[in-house]
Image (cartoon, rainbow, N blue to C red):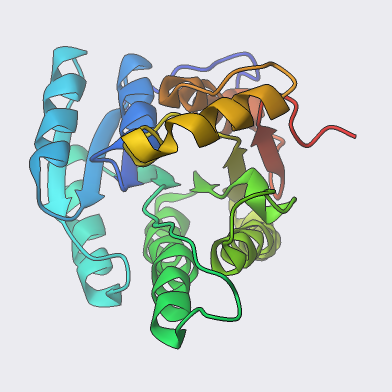
Amino acid sequence: MNNPLSFALDGRTALVTGGGSGIGQAIALGIAQQHGSVGIVDLPGEGPEETLHLIRSAGAKATFVQADVTNAEQLEEAVSKIQADLGPLTMAVNSAGIANAAPAEEMPLNQWQKVYDIDVTGVFLSCQAEGRAMLKNGGGSIVNIASMSGSIVNRGLLQVHYNSAKAAVIHLSKSLAMEWAERGVRVNALSPGYTMTKMNSRPEMVHQMEVFAHETPMKRIADPSEMAGPAVFLLSEASSFVTGIDLLADGGFCAQ
């Protein structure tokens, strides 16, 4: 029987989309700190190189593959390269995503569609490529980064596309969990609350983030590193009987 108290990821290989920044980067580093190898899948830039440096500094193996999560062929190639470099894939975190805002009555179709293409279709295509590998490898665990915005509507943020997309990610995760449960692949969603990523630390966001901190029961904004623990739990044997859930890490915001 697996050890239900073990959070260690020794000898296992993870793929992290969006691992070049923010929550994805923090989780990638958390996996490395638990001795897992990490394949970063992201668009080119300084972020992925920074993540590679952080992972290797933690004593773990890492590789970077440039890929667009809306491109199924590129994702399949990314999985193949990561397995060739680091070993059989048994863990994945799908963190790649975008957010923006516009009033619903004024939102152009291309703005709606781009969010859905990346935040929903991109997650599905990532899960599909990862799931195919894990089913061949005898099992694994996938964590999809959703948002508390998939469960509640954020006051003061005009983002009907983002909210509904994250709700789709939550239900997508549950649906895949049920399809693959008997074949050893667990799928869960992790839904952060307000988190101090680069997108939320822009000068024009300072006042709004102060408001969000006040509205959060814990009276603060999360640091991206605080999402690593919940993700490691869902990836590890400590959650061996957990699949199809949406784990809220929101400082109590959604509590009723």
